[in-house]
Structures are given as structure tokens and as C-alpha cells.
Image (cartoon, rainbow, N blue to C red; front, side, top):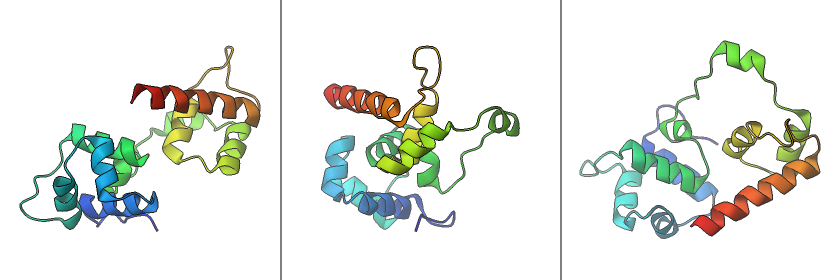
Length: 139
């Protein structure tokens, strides 16, 4: 169950970390933060300084969620932009078939393939694998 808006950032971090099957040590390595700082955040210790936006971004990226998810806030989208775009059916099918996280689907929505959105699940898969491979090389 996703964190509720009343939960602390630390509780949200722990929720998403555990959902990914990741230890605090693994999250620390992936973000470049100390394990003790991650533990302080998750425990909501009064001595823990709140994470900066940059730190929160690194944690969200490592957990493959949006920063808004960690904050327990909805992503704000204007009604106009929501009406303008509907997620392509092939992308919806790709996401369901390969259990792609929502932040990744939002990123893929902006992809143009030969001037337009990919048309098939297979095209989405090729693009997604290429992006994942290139981001793994950059780490």
C-alpha cells in the first residue's frame, strides 16, 4: 500500500525502499549518502535534518519513484495538459506486460520515435532497454 499524505518522508522512503527489496545500505550506496543518514531519515529522528531537494531527488531516482511520491503529494498536472495527451495504448500495454514503474512510463511518454510515439509494445521495449542500458553505463 502506498504511503498516505500523513506519513513522513522517512516512512515513505522506507516504504518504497522495502517495496524494491533494497536494504538501507544499498540505498546509501546508490545515492552516495551515508547509511546512518538514511536510517535517521527513515526513523524520523529529530536530529535528522530534512533532506534537501537535491538529496530527495537522488533518493527518488534510486527508488524509481517521483519526488511527489516520497512527499505523499499528488503530481500536479494542469487540466489542459491532461486533456491534450492520452497515454498511447501501446505504452499502456507495454507498462502492464513488463511491470514498468509509473515514473518510467511518464518519461517514456515524451519519447519521439521517427517523428512520433512508438506504435508497438516491441518498439517501446527496445527504447526502454536502450535507455536503461545507457543509464547503467553512466553510473
